[in-house]
Amino acid sequence: MKAYAMLEIGKTGWIEKEVPKCGPMDAICRPIAIAPCTSDVHTVWEGAMGDRHNLILGHECAAEVVEV
Image 1 (cartoon, rainbow, N blue to C red):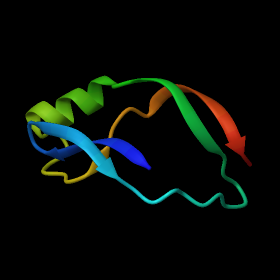
Image 2: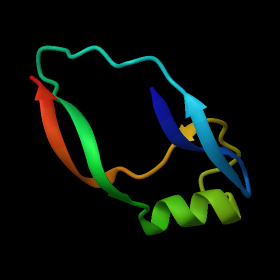
Image 3: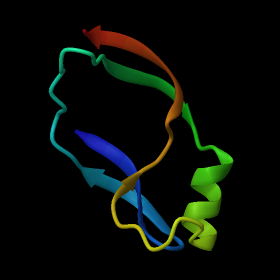
Image 4: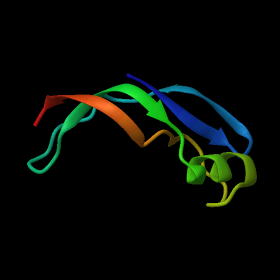
C-alpha cells in the first residue's frame, strides 16, 4: 500500500508499505481525507523530532473502518 512519509528532513514523498494486520484491539481504516498536524510540519521542515526516515505523516483524518 502507498503511504505519504517524511523521507528525511525537508523531504517528503510516497513510499510502499506492507498492508497492516489487524490485532485484537485494532481497527484498519481506509483514509478518505488526511491533514498534516503542526507536529508533522515542524518535524519535516525543521527536524523537530530529529532526523527521521520513512515516518508516516497525516494521522489526523476522516476514514472508513474496513476491519476490526
